[in-house]
Every structure is written in C-alpha cells, then in structure tokens.
Image (cartoon, rainbow, N blue to C red):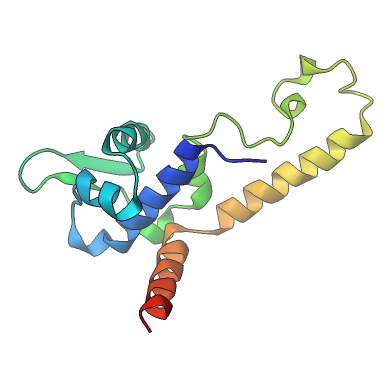
Length: 143
C-alpha cells in the first residue's frame, strides 16, 4: 500500500498542529513553512480535515487552525481516512465485482488480513504519540 501525497502531507500538518496544540490557533502559512508544503496545497488538505471535523478554523488576526480535540483523541487512522480514497491494498476488497475470481481467490484472505493490520496500526497511534516522537527527534538533532 502506498499513501498519497495528500495523506502524507495531511498527517504532517496534523502532527504540527498537535505539537502546537496548547498555543491556540496556528496560521496556515506557519505550518506550510515548517513542513515544506505549498500553501495552496495545504489549504486543500485543511478544508478536507475541517469537513471531517478534525480541525477547527478561525478567521481574523488571531485566526488559523487548531485541532478539534486533544491530540491524544485523534488517531492516525482518523486523519488518513478522509484524505485517502481507500486503505485497501487491492481493489477487490472495496469493489467485489472488480474481479470474477473474488469468491475463489486464495490471496484475498491474505489481503484482508493485511488491510486489518494496517487499520489496527493506524488506529492505535495518536497524534500525541507522533508529536512526542517528533519532539524527541528534534531534541536528538539539536544535541
């Protein structure tokens, strides 16, 4: 399985918001600069995350974006699902009539297991976990 750029960048932006969670709203230009993401592309990502009720936006001088709930309450799966079309490693898991062998395919059970493991891993990691790891990595880098 390969995640799209929008999912990878969306997760990076959400980790950034998690790292700045206690500071209130964060300007999109600050996230874009820190994460090396085009501002226009990031606007598209954030609109999807707002629509998914993961992020709150506010206009005005002190406006920007912030997480809709605590970083410990948002899983990586919560972030990835609204940004990816599918998390299935093969098309037949989402579209059974994709293949006429779907009922007799020995590999399908393997792909179902792979998908379940992916969902489990992504569902068990929170933004708080990744923000803590990011801080740890930054501290190692500055030593």
